[in-house]
Image (tube, rainbow, N blue to C red; front, side, top):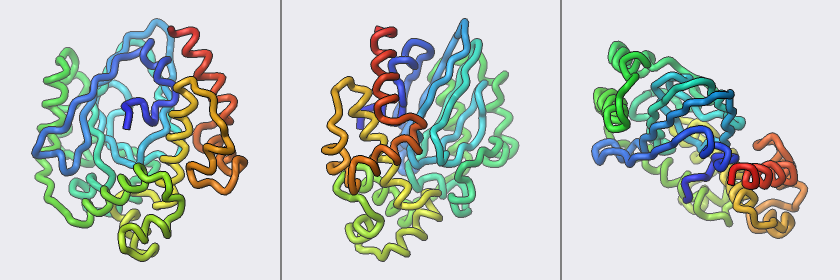
Length: 267
């Protein structure tokens, strides 16, 4: 999957901040997808919109530090002045090893870093991180995660595999189809997602289908919405358009015009 998936207008972002991604260290890779560092120095405020993946993010720095549960709606970051964040993006299902409660309890919520790290959170205060280079920022958040001593969990790995299957196979349009591929009952799959992912299988499937539709639009290629709706498993074009607007906040036509304008002005 390309790095811009989920970033609703990456060209605008490129003009306002830098984003560097780093692979998770081997010992944390079963749970953490990657780490990243974002920096900005702005003369004018900027809003970056994303359509988040179904995963937990742990963020330190000057903008909304904390443990971020899966947001149900698009996420808008309001960036002003000069700042930075370093984050760890968890694999779907991976955060349960760090938080021994149903991950659905975190959905749509943000917790302070101290709720996860206790006294260790002091090392991730913005003034302690200010002036560090990327390597040192990543090392700080990696060290904090290692103090939690996570353990492997077969059910967490099953949840990760289920989400990856929903993302990668666009023919899967229903919870029952995903459950069948995993040789599970739909009810068991729902329970697994509540405990380990935080949102339902239906939510995950719809999110990835709308992300794919966004990706088609922002590349600049004209979309045949009826054909795309069929390809992504929607009953018809109107269902895709309704779902798209509910998640993105714009109709496909409005989103296409926004991306086209940014491509022209930020070229």
